[in-house]
Image (cartoon, rainbow, N blue to C red):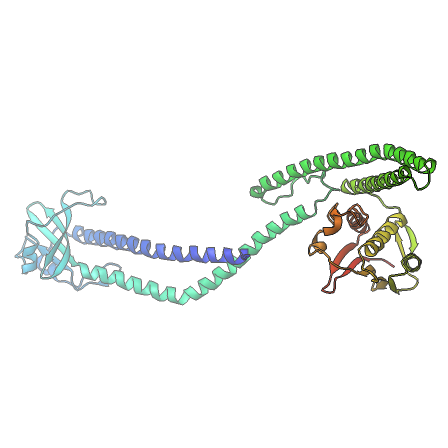
Length: 452
């Protein structure tokens, strides 16, 4: 099952966003707690340093504290005067662990914590000669400030989450589209590659440097493919040329043997069979030569105006004469002329007819069709058949493929005819297809867009 790349990118970004929110929330709480603790220490320090010592009148609470917040729990004590409460007496408890902070360099100022009657107090102790001053604040009020901060944060986030997610979806969709566009450009560059332009290497086809190594690998592959194609086509072409001359000579000797041997003798029959096999080899080499030129991109056409109506009508007439046991039907449109290579198109049409005849049934039929509708030219040869291989539609154009009956050699052929037709159709800008329906009817159809 194929997955959507865009959906995959969007889900990955959403997952990363959720992870970010979770981590951010935890880390923000830790940082906020540390920040408030430092802020409390700083403001307590400012209060305790702002006076030489606390007087009796300065011990009242409700002093403005921490961003102008009035804390009811702020307590001031000094040994200069009588300590005002049991709480102040508790601040003299020797069990309190007094420490210094990194921000305070004075040896006379220390910080500590002490619990009394279920309340934890944050205390600043200032030693001024023989006088001890204490400034304390209930830690629960500090936590209350922190909780109020979380409430504000949660309220704001609950209002903007929907907007953020919507914005994130739009961004991820844009990002995935942008990535797909980059991939499609590389795809277009690769898909435009064929045998004709393998040697043409663009200077800088990659937009981003990260994609350049992939393009370089593909360009290197193009060079190797070009070399392989040239070597393969050169071998096929050279082999066809080299084989054609000796095969022609052998056929000449075989034909001479047919003429010089006694009529009906075993020698004459052997010479006849030999001449037929040599002729078959010559036919194969001719087709291989054309295919080699096509593979190398050197198959050229010499176009001229061809009256296809006359070609099809003549072929249908010959089919009725040569094959009286077959029913011939036609749908041939009049006055269809097309500028194409006459030799190659004649070969294509004849190959389609030849296959329809060879793979037909006893008392079968062949239907010829030639139409030109909305600038689309269609040439089709349809025939009855039997025991059609299931893979015929997929493999018919494979070279040397002849179906299940190919091994018996009861039906003449090389298995190259449809492959050659496919190349002829391609070089004319058309498409050749072969379809088999449930009634075992085989339809070979060539379609091409034509100009006026």
